[in-house]
Image 1 (cartoon, rainbow, N blue to C red):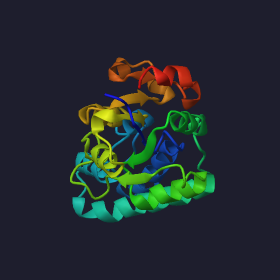
Image 2 (image 1 turned 90 degrees about the vertical axis):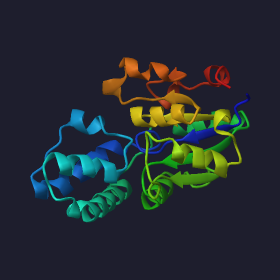
Image 3 (image 1 turned 45 degrees about the vertical axis):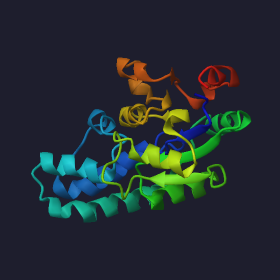
Image 4 (image 1 turned 90 degrees about the horizontal axis):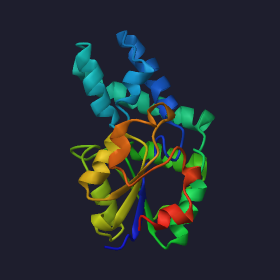
Length: 219
């Protein structure tokens, strides 16, 4: 099998948005007197906001009738924060250029809603770097379910087994492997040395560490 396609995650990989999501979640959940610490938050990265809220509202016995309005509120807060202070992660341009140099088709597959995907691409100036963008927003299941990655592969006219994913979360890594795709993982620094990342084909502390040589070995 020859790798023909690269699929990038977005939050925490292309843009340093996880702190923004954390801020937005704390602000929005404060009205329910819910506080989540950093460790608890990062254990849920890669999930859609709906699933994140189902867990935390349920844990604190908050009526799930508040879920939709809270989901919209958090998303709107994140979009505002992206435009105010969102920053591209180190090495993103390097990684995209390396995949382009190897002639791969490039897509984006995110758990985030399309409204946020579009905001991030506008903020970072990456609009023209991806042939297709796919969101798990309207899918029955988000990551770690593989459907958003499979949909992205299909949209790129590629077989899932011919794809390599770039991810930062464990839920994303599980989704990539469930789709039978290779995966390059770039974990949050606090989790860099966890053994769970060993199922990835390559672990990096930053996309700046990606080079044509180590990338070629995975194709």
